[in-house]
Length: 269
Image (cartoon, rainbow, N blue to C red; front, side):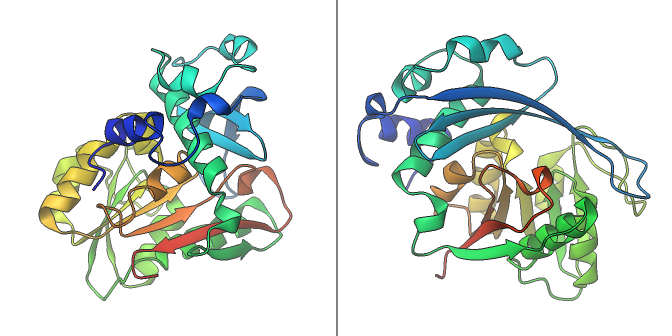
């Protein structure tokens, strides 16, 4: 069983998951700053992403403001994934490289055990609600189930409560959900109080994924991950702590009004 992200990286570098990462060239690298405020909301989401293209896929990872300078991308195109994975580059860049490798070896759209979910065309709020309903559908949420939500997205809060669940939100950047729930900053406390956990792939970028994974393993709690960040990385932990995954490869749904796909995985499929 792959225990932690560092173990997965070591296995990739050792050739345990396919061709050597030195054989994969980064053809483009780019940095995105994206903001969103849905109609009627009083919160503006501010997201930063670094993306590395390898062949037909993109490795993606979010990061915090000021963590990565846009100038980084100028010298990254042309490097190999092995070069990035063995470097002391910022963690989000190394996660993006790991994501690119695993997605190149097995793209989500060709994975035989992935369920494709096509999000409808529409406005940002229509597409966000469809996406978050697809994520919530990965959980068996009975009436009164306490669901820790690590990384708050308001439509996902609603999707959990609409199914009868009790949402326990946790986020480092928010204090209250749109529906008025108090947001905790203590991930361990929230996970310990929950019956099930839903977590963002952004836990990969801030280094808390290993803690989350270990906690859920120790307590035998189902862990569903919704990931734009590191979606192929999270997939590598299916059956090893992650019980379900909603993987959304780049280009992400918020960058288009047209139909787009995400891919759901379950450990029982």
